[in-house]
Image 1 (tube, rainbow, N blue to C red):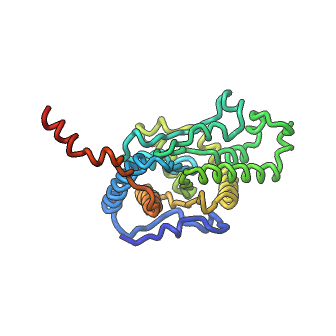
Image 2 (cartoon, rainbow, N blue to C red):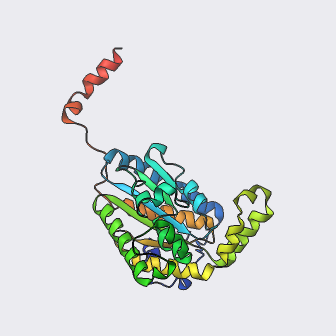
Image 3 (cartoon, rainbow, N blue to C red):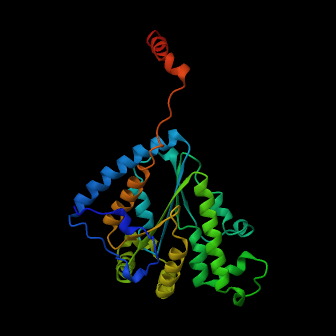
Length: 292
């Protein structure tokens, strides 16, 4: 298998999405990739147990991508070996009336993982500078002071949102949350193939929505919005990674590798030592159990 450097996929300077690959060739077959994914996710599962016992860090994983980019299957396959008590997945959809009664970050803040746990945002707080930017009329539902019509939503508004998101992520990072942000970078041709499969294969019919075709017509607008969001919010404490997503197997392996290779650099994440008194009486506890 081709050796990969995870730093090659991290956004550390201004990028153009058109210059980033949508396909990663690992120079091996599908079964070999699956085998490497299995090994990596098992190591991730063990690391998760240690992080849970350590109880000082949380891990937030943000997954964004166009329709059919493979977000759901990514979550299913990469985190299959996790203990369910240590991981929580949130899929953010259209805001409810309760959520619209608060600021746009509120529903994300209350869904953050506790220390010792992994939290996955399937679609994230970035929807608020992506979908709402392509469809600015949605902003009107937020009832924001000073925003009386779509004409009031200008470039300064979006710059302010980027700053608010950066402040939000910096705050939680400084308080012990390790942040990963993955953009599943899909080509337009591959999306077409996946949408057609949903229409052709009966067992996939339920995944199809006519709205997918309407959003596909706005592909170029979404690419511009993604590019600006990534360029304005990829920070050392909350980096973006562009993941070539045309092949699901290699994309899953790459995400698993990035997670594991990064988290293992945190040398302070380790299982806590036993209390001295408990440690001194281990033999006595064993004796009590053996004499039952």
